[in-house]
Image (cartoon, rainbow, N blue to C red):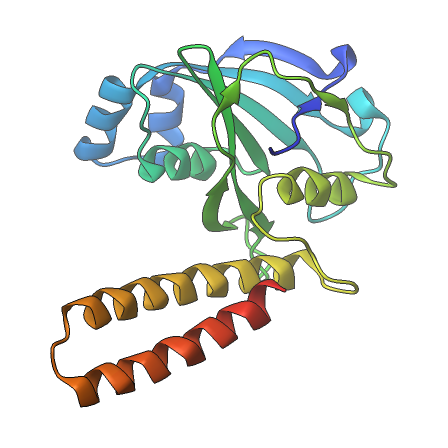
Amino acid sequence: MAVLFECPASAAFGRVLPKSKIYEHAEPSSAVKESFIRQVEKIVWQYKLSPETVNLKETEAVPEIQIFSVLLRTGDLKTEILRCIDNAIPLPVIFELLYEGKRKVVAAYKRPAETGSSKWITSEYFETDWQPANSFRQPLPMVLNLEALYSQLLGSVFPYASRRDETLKEYVERLELARSKQKEIEKCQVKLRKEKQFNRKVDLNSQLRNLMREMEGLTA
């Protein structure tokens, strides 16, 4: 079960974030707005983790970390909604989704564009399983700065552990590659189940073994 962290009271913000404000800054399509209406009850800007609130130094990559609670109308949430919110907030964001007494954490790795512009680059999204909303929470980890804290918070959402001397960017790129490789494996398995010809089955089995070895190399 994924780790949930307890933010200190000094970091509490607790303000409802109107959907209209998100629309102003992210300019979502009509389809995304409709998804907001159907799937999202309320968005609360729950915590601001900053040098003033958690006594950790900022870095150029992570000046602050925002924690948003998203109360859902349904058990599903389109990724486009989270990406819309991320596009509206030029800072790293960790989402906690709440639905019928359960909670899950969802986040993408977010970093400033290397071109020096004000844009941010957002990775794919990763999420934990649903847990009881009142699950035990651990104190925030002891780290040196907000960038290290962000890495720890993301690590609690990611499906595989980081490797020694691996940067956060390298870590996320490996996870995204592993996700892509998993999709290739699933497609190959489907083809194998449907294939009738023996020679073709042999070829597909060989492909599948190679894909599994590559996947093991990415996740070990």
